[in-house]
Image (cartoon, rainbow, N blue to C red):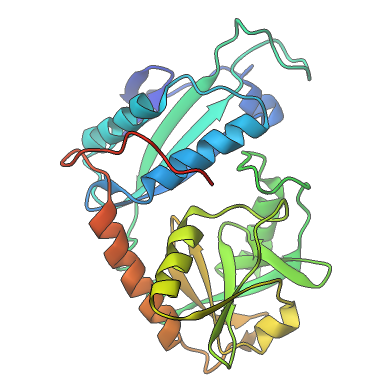
Length: 298
């Protein structure tokens, strides 16, 4: 099947998808993106993704060329045209194409909307069975990490450094404390079986998967501590894991070459992954059900 992308009002073969070289996303990374997990042909945590998109757009004064209902319809149509049952959907809004100038262009320049899908094994991911290794790196990003900006060079460099060390993810560290993964949220579980989650703020992205995972953890009567944790505390933890749209709940078994706990996925992490997948499958928004018409705030 030919992969289909959506580019500014048109569904086109991915090989024919084009944007202008004057697009401000290309020139200035002046844009916002979202990545949504797709399970059983539906969008996971869709309402929260739309809420975060709206918030990020507002933080940089950028308008979306489609309203909430239309954007949902377009995403579902993209899934249908690609026949995607499991994977991810990428969505990006930029400030459009205009002559290169650091200032915002005039209001007559329409913003740009592009989307594409990627088929991936989310549920039967072999990394989830074995767990992954992570490498700690300095956090080199800007001061508004709560905005889901397409400016990802620091994360690219962090991922590459991790890959060179044989690791699947990088955990970024600032002032001795872990902020988050290069493309995920980072958590530890202490030997007292408490789940430690860094509080939200400008230092980290308000992860959509995190919202559901923490809610599910509360329902499991798991003790949750909202605080920063140090890299040393992570090394001493009983369990550790990441969460993201592309990885769901992913066990971390090694940091900087040192095993976490027994060096295998822990029981709490495995349980959280299981119930998150169950939750996701029960709540997906798809072409086979009625999609939501109002979205929660983040």
